[in-house]
Image (cartoon, rainbow, N blue to C red; front, side, top):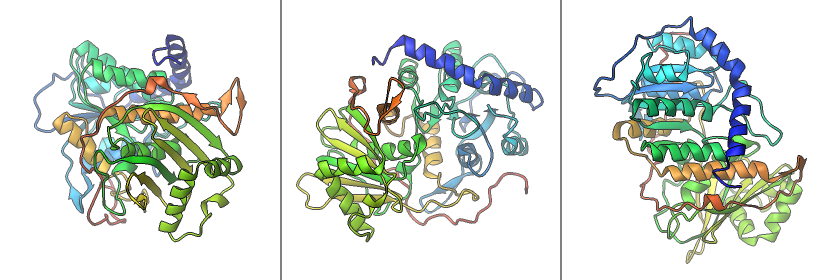
Length: 444
């Protein structure tokens, strides 16, 4: 499929708009009862002013609550509480009626909630009136399609932000939580717009910047031959976390990122473990993870519901995400000239009912981008992680029929190359206390 295929892209957007129209109208009606600001003329600010646009804001399972509260009140970074370096000045909530917590937080923090995405980024005026935009299109009451794509309206919000950029003839950094879109054409359009309008773009999973054991980063130009990630991957959201972890390591291989040649999905333990047996490199790495956690050999193979995402890169490097529980998110890489695999784990997420829930390093890098106006890592990685996820979800389906052994899908449109230049970005030092209440501005 061409990355610029107009028919599929247009159809997808129509379908998406159709699925979100009712929610949008509800948001508009509800928004009319909230505080709105008068037209604002952009003024210089020592602290970047941020508009947050989200699908849903409640507790306990809401990325909006986990991220936005840290942008407002600070986060845990390198063993201590850090004050936020940005000001959240406006908000848009798509599923407004079911986001009572978001309404209360914004009221307590004097953050106006606007009726539309466009009004949030112009703050009720006619021109862009913020220094950065954070889009959190995760969670809420949205349908899934036959293939399991969760039809979250990230593109729908993003394109309205871009429209304001184009009308205002200037742009600001944009963060998009998790993958860009459930559809490759829309995701590629989102990436291309960031390059066309010259604004920094970031997003992705919070796992690559979470605490690590051991606290190490793979050096740039490491001769990585093959890699796996073992983690919970039961659905689109779970597999994206694992894929983004895979990409954050393999992009540092010798010669840099060369792009993705193919993606394949295999579902169910029977076929997954047959594939592992046929690919000794994957079995060896999986055994090394089991040994690292003092598990018996073959422990992962007892999972009858396992899946595998198989990634082939243009330079011949191989990667796989294998469903496995009890090891957090664990990367294992076969390094040329090294006897034993390199194993790095991200373990022990705290619960959501605390100011220092899992997502702390991510808000740090969001604010870093807003302050410096530079991408914390190449946005190409975010696009590749998105594309791998999209085609993993598509692989098992053809002409409306499901097959446990999915098609190997060639992805010549993911042939982008770049060389990583970033240093370590994961959180370090003492872990945060798990019982610090949110600084919401109200007691209950």
